[in-house]
Image (cartoon, rainbow, N blue to C red; front, side):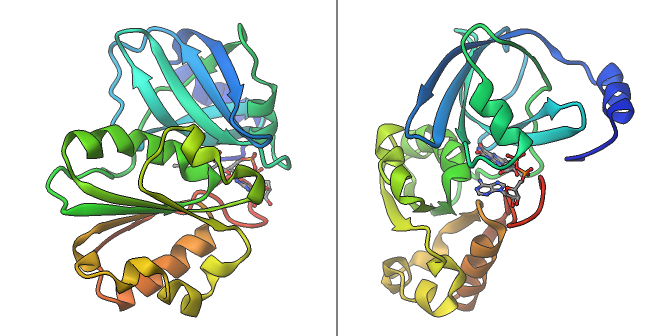
Amino acid sequence: MPSAPKWLFDAVDLFISKLPDVVVNETELISQTVKRVRLSGNFRDLNFPVGCYIDFRVSDTEARRYTVSHADKDHGFLELVVHLHGSGSGSQFMQDLKPEDEIKMNKPRTERNYYDRSAAGYVIFGDETSLALACSFLPVLKQNKQQFQFIFELDDQNKKAPELLGLENYMVFAKNGSFRNEEWVNQLPLFQTPDFQKASFVLTGNAKSAQTFRKVAKSKGAQKIYLHGYWLDGKKGL
Ligand SMILES: Cc1cc2nc3c(=O)[nH]c(=O)nc-3n(C[C@H](O)[C@H](O)[C@H](O)COP(=O)(O)OP(=O)(O)OC[C@H]3O[C@@H](n4cnc5c(N)ncnc54)[C@H](O)[C@@H]3O)c2cc1C
């Protein structure tokens, strides 16, 4: 429910328990348009599966989803990595967050189990909105010694974001529409390597790019593909 009348959100808020005393602990601009936000609170009783997200009420009438990039229940903090793309209420809400702000927060949830311990390897595709997802995957993939490749389409100013966030095994491409061109995607080095069909594909970020990627991966024999468009041009929320 990305948009709804204020009275409806107010009514829903009465029934869904919020996490008390969540405070912005620290914010950091990774680039001009990628921001890391650290929230502190008592998260001890929560689960944070890979790729879980939180619905934030970003205005009286709007809610937006953001992935938990990292959580530390023992020390009572969690982190988000958000794209400040500038034109929406979610982006504005995240841009405005500063240390000591108190926020009302829903519990994290997932719609699907992104991570499978038995997967041979992972190919994870997305854009700035997928950086948090990549950060949440990284420790578990390394710990379980699974192969992985992150592939990002990013604005030029965000090319360094994966490195600054400590990601590994990533390829960065310019966000210039290439990932909406099937022939171009077909030529990606990944598809020229043996055994890529055995990998699990997790395709997020811009919905059109992710759909094109899925079409090509499927046509080349990939078996396990999870598609979750995080945003669509011209559409509010998803
Ligand atoms: C499960 C899930 C997890 C997500 N996790 C994250 C996350 O960790 N970090 C994160 O930054 N985003 C994340 N997103 C994406 C985020 O919820 C959307 O980008 C959302 O639309 C932002 O809301 P907004 O109010 O800023 O813009 P909206 O009001 O939704 O949209 C306004 C306009 O901006 C465009 N727009 C929306 N997002 C972008 C963008 N990123 N770049 C350029 N144009 C855009 C829309 O197409 C529309 O034209 C996630 C989405 C989902 C579904």
